[in-house]
Amino acid sequence: MIENLSICHVEKHREDAVSCGEAAQWALFETCQRKVFISMVSHTPRPDNLKGEVLRGEAAYSLLLNIVCGLQSKVVGETEVLGQFKIFANSEPADQPIWFKQFRRVAQDILVDAKEIRSVYLHSVGHRSYGALTASHLKNCKSTAIIGGGQLARKALPYLNDRGQKLCLFLRDPSRAAQIPARMLKNVNVKSLGEQGDLSGVKGMVVAAPMSSRAIASWMKSCNFTPDMVVDLRDQNAHERLSVSGKLITLDDLFANIETVSEAFEERIRAAKNRISHLARERSFVRHYRPFGWEDICT
Figure 1 (cartoon, rainbow, N blue to C red):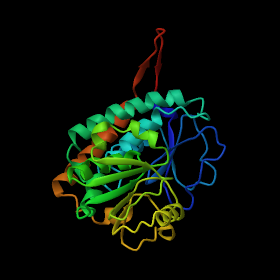
Figure 2 (figure 1 turned 90 degrees about the vertical axis):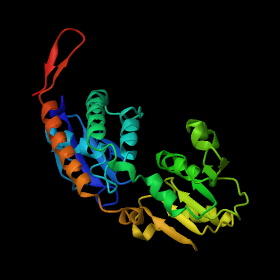
Figure 3 (figure 1 turned 60 degrees about the vertical axis):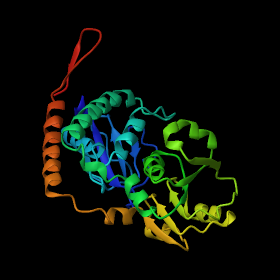
Figure 4 (figure 1 turned 45 degrees about the vertical axis):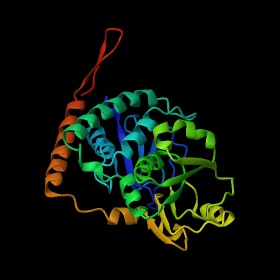
């Protein structure tokens, strides 16, 4: 199965990290840090305008599993990328390539193998999550505004709730709050971004939505909102940094402040990567049985 798998991986804000254009043989798996172009078309050429190396077969599976396990992330072992991959693998985009159902079978193998890697080798490595790091910077704020209700916001909500903060969650569509587990909405007031409520007593802010810095600055101005501390979880270029009067903590700042992984963790990470290489090798020889009595040997 994986002999047809190809991936082209680039960091999200490199100059060549453009859209895959009209190349129907590629699908884009995008996270806050990277873009991974995926194909199941044998010997498909590299996406237009991309300089990243195309990996195929066993090498492609190995790298994709490393990414899903959080071993390519700046926060080693973080779990957000796993959730993002699950959403991508189960998506039903209108322009979905005809081979995407075939990829879902590979994605299921990835998720099975990722569960093993995380439970055996990484069960405590990723405890330094985005949510914990965000909450640590906002510990002195009794009230915090959060823009966005996606994966990153949901990672921060439990940690902020544990500190007893008053939270205001701003969404483009407040009805989407119904998709957030009720336990995360304790002490949370959900509002629309279109509302211009009184935020005079709110001292902290978390940006966890894919809005432009200009749009965020315009919203803050309309609300007369000047927080003392802003944690911006968007992956932005330097020239796109949000301009605020208080202290700004960017995603790069969070990464820079992460303590060095201990020697014991480093050994487990090496073991995890070795196991991933072994699993990729096994998958390259896997035998897939079909429901109609015939089988496809992928070697």
